[in-house]
Length: 317
Ligand code: XMP
Image (cartoon, rainbow, N blue to C red; front, side, top):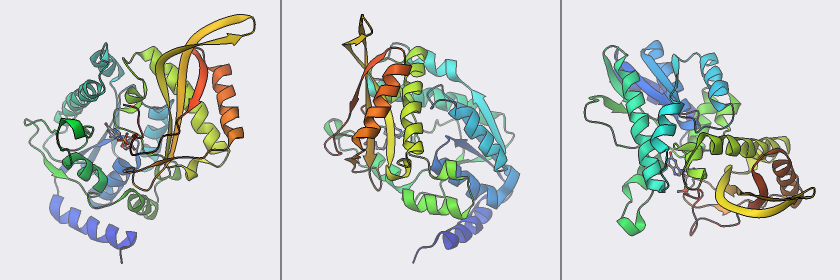
């Protein structure tokens, strides 16, 4: 039987032999996977692991600062890089979801590559790839069945002649969490919902601007903090908000408004491959909706997504 302790012991030993005294670079995303991968490798090689955490301007509200702090507390050798403007300019005017993903992937690789070049004689690239990432990336069957290009699998530029190390490649998410717990990683990182690499960009339908990101961050923050306050956060697999380009009429005092519609999405799932919408209590949804409409300028209507995957996907883009 699989246990996290055995996995850790075997993997750390393997990493030590595999890597020796080489230097390794790893991109932290704030998510469970990259964080657990980092801590495992850190156990094996300590300060020879160089972590890079890029602020792509598409993270949740205050996420970059909070998470960077907890990484430092965990003893990781981590560098935070503010690349917001680069991502925003690459995204300007793009509306097609795949083009948005590609632009984000490309800028990430550029930024990451610049940073990696500053680490003298680095030999390895570590990634937090888990088993479902591997499957979704190889099961592309053609244009009609194209599964989104997850930018954390493959896609390495040739000029980065690094060897790849992926210690979580055989694990499912729940196993990654168990390993993380056994490694004493902070609960705020371990218990965290999955969050897509392209971040809020694929939850802003259509083109992305810093202003839209700001609006969505506020909406998302209200939703997520209410889930936490009500003890519902751990019961859903993933939750977030979508900023739609649809405007609808509303009324505020004596004024007629014409503002954006946001959608809330919360799903239950075991591995993200299939999912069902969470039956969140009506009262909870009512409170969140009121708070969003009262507090967030530019939003006058909230809807709840009741689609399951398949045939819908978790994300809207
Ligand atoms: P979908 O929307 O395909 O999402 O049902 C399944 C899971 O994958 C995440 N997701 C992504 N993660 N890059 C990522 O790193 C992406 O481009 C991407 N698209 C979707 C999604 O958040 C969900 O957890």
